[in-house]
Length: 322
Image (cartoon, rainbow, N blue to C red):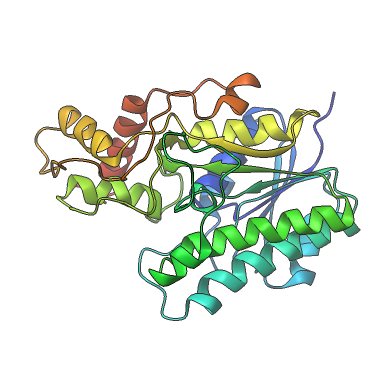
């Protein structure tokens, strides 16, 4: 049975590139790769060349803030993987314009195009940043998909990325409520693994900086980590599973960043990894099967040690780590 034509926004980013690769491996032959105008799509063409001869990746330059451009990318597709969202390594100078508006309005433009053009399902890439930090979450309870980030708490601490992801996902669910479109959301933890794209992404930079001696505890941005190929597999699984609905946390467990740092230091003792003392995420409750909704659908997570090694090898090969 032929696979449905699909569109991937942010297709040449870290997660987007892996979703394109995974779709090609799964036999999808008509993929609309939506990228930010002027950004580099060459590695997506390489992915197509490595796939079956009848696969076709069409590149569309579309700023998600441009509704007409988004509609051109989505036209003819039955599924949309909306991944595009601004995430910078530096603090934004104008967070509303640089982060919040592209996340919220971009998501609404994608959903509006999907509704008008008869898309069957949209898989929305949200983030654990739409789950935490949550200052009112019950103590002694592991974070799950019912948690929402405390916006006032984040704004008071100038943590704008969680604000942007939370507002974008809430806007999406409001759109669903009003228009009845089929949407499922996936909320990945810190994403690790080989970089298919040429530039360094923010999540892999967390591991890079840790290996270089950073003392940042990731207090506001950490629940756990997950291999990027698992996120991509989960996205396709959610698109192909008719019963899938709602929010899906995607992480290989919940645990302290200090525990992650300790694991990294044991694998790579030659690097100056900081040894954290005490809890880096005060009150965070550990949970081995935090992504049980995805596990129940059949997703098997890659061991964390493999994700760490794959990332380090990739960072070294691309010159981001000595």
